[in-house]
Image (spheres, rainbow, N blue to C red):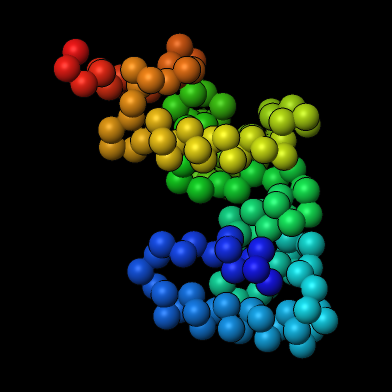
Length: 147
């Protein structure tokens, strides 16, 4: 339960709805699954508050499945560095699953999320600090402060 609850975004302004979903999810896990978190995507997605992204995170973290959680950071970074040209998170997820080598598949989406969160930000990417700037197709490179 804690693994799913942690995967449901905590920083959203919908805390009442999140709390309601966590309670409903907990009841279903206890009543229908004996308190065990299911490992199948379709079953996870049937739980309250669990969508594809959360199901992918749970499958990846809790069950070691090489999934790609398509959040905004993954979507942005994958498109900027040419790993995907997908117009939706689902298309980007499919591209990444197809091209990421199996030995990196378990952690790849975490690396993309962290890169997007701390370097390749939506509003002010820190291109001058980026170790993969030469691969980037983002034309509007952000100069270093004071440059």
